[in-house]
Image (tube, one colour):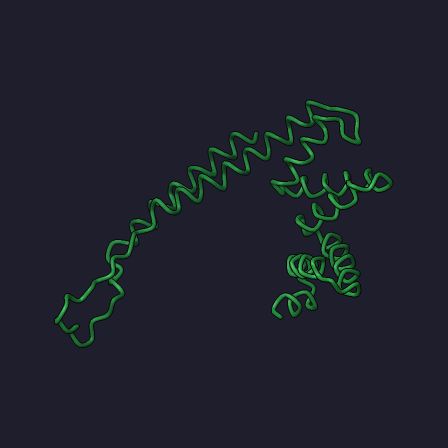
Length: 178
């Protein structure tokens, strides 16, 4: 399918998605393919693959240390789930010496990144004009040449406002990060 084609072209995210599909397979060959795809995808820097492989290794006592390194690498790539997991690992001292400062730092970054996603999504949806569909009343025929798509009247100023707010938000988050 689509993932296979993209994975063959070397797209790390596609390799990761394909690996997840193969992992659920009953076929042993596909399960082996899943492992090599995960490895390849994480080597290419896909943070989801790093986290997935890290969690897999983390469960194996012989591989736990390696698992932590991969989870931390995914966290350093700003993967929110990895940030939360590595924060937990350091807070609990799970396979590493407990380090509450490191745990707090990772938690803080995760909260900040989660907040940025929430805020930008909220702002973006707040300034997207709602489209009203014009319904022809029963028995009325639509005029020839008229379409359901309303003409973009004042959307240009909405985009200006949206972009202004997003720039302001980015400035705020940039100052918080300092």
